Image 1 (cartoon, one colour):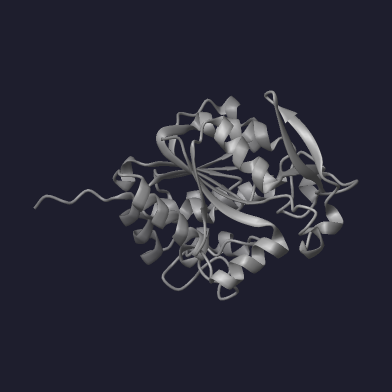
Image 2 (cartoon, rainbow, N blue to C red; image 1 turned 180 degrees about the vertical axis):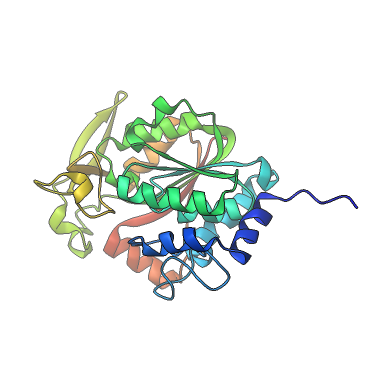
Length: 286
């Protein structure tokens, strides 16, 4: 009788059914802060503290968008997850059969990513420790899917990174961008981050002028000792305005840009846009 080759998804689910007890104990002893990753059929990194990463509304929106817009089998899709934090979204994409590579700079977060990769031991899930601002030096081949979720607004050079992402995206691929943007004067009072945001200012990049606000990430502390969700190599970051963000995407080569609504209940989304100046985008070259 001929055995059926085991897919990447089969391999991950097999580990969940038959966990490695020693590796599982090491993972559960780690200080998880955000991603609730399923490890067995009943155990996950954060238990019942929050929904599983595989059931997260944003992750489901990403996966739905990929299925609708990327006309390839999952095993033929290369996915880059920038600033992947604890590796949860990378894991969720690998579970669907995609070849997921997570990039994370902060050592404490990367160590947890490495634990996940070692535990599941699947060839389609891997991680590299690197600052997103220096991703070009990795010499990566282009990806069909690039995820930039909660990282762009932690950078002091966001326009450089947007250009790098365009270079790393295939002509028929997509960028999923989840980011804060600088509120305008009319909405500044409603923004929860107003005390850490500076005045509207302008920056020039590649001959174009963009508006935004500087945001204070941390002060007088080594960045790796600070909160695991803050910037790694810069004490302040630059948040482009909504308009400048779209213009930067367009000028970098993403000529179709869609802002997504409906990830959450619509009233909640409008409230989040006002209070957190946050939005979701899909950007494509074609």
